Image (tube, rainbow, N blue to C red; front, top):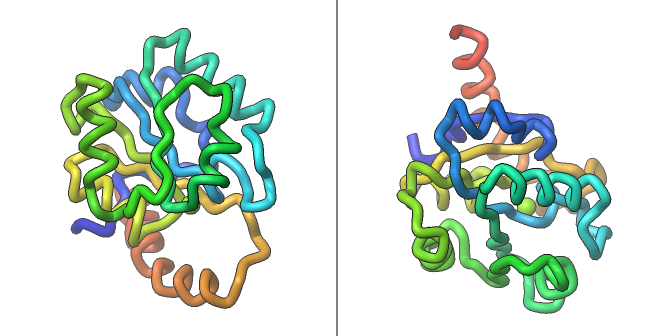
Length: 166
Ligand SMILES: [Mg+2]
């Protein structure tokens, strides 16, 4: 099921050393909006920076692929020293394929971490990556996102049910 995330986590802090090791994850491609920060947050948070530092220590490669524009992604990624694609056109796989090559890893060693089913999860699954869905950071959302989220709810619930059965 191409829309189904392989993992559901409350937020990116759940990407612990154990979680990454257990699942053979050597690289991470992050979404920005509602995944690393809320829409109004222009720069990485202290928690984001601590996470990135830990990933570097662990030898985990990481990068950003956002469907947002150049200004947003550029401002967020400035000074981080990592690859950051804007207008990544997820679920299309061009940016994801470029990052996989940059990492020098196999698709199944890379986690795509995002908050949206129809862009992040579909894109990651189509690319053969490990898909990790986070709960969106912002609670206040536009009508567009409310509708979109309503469409996503059945997929998330199905995954939760599956996890509960394990
Ligand atoms: Mg997002």
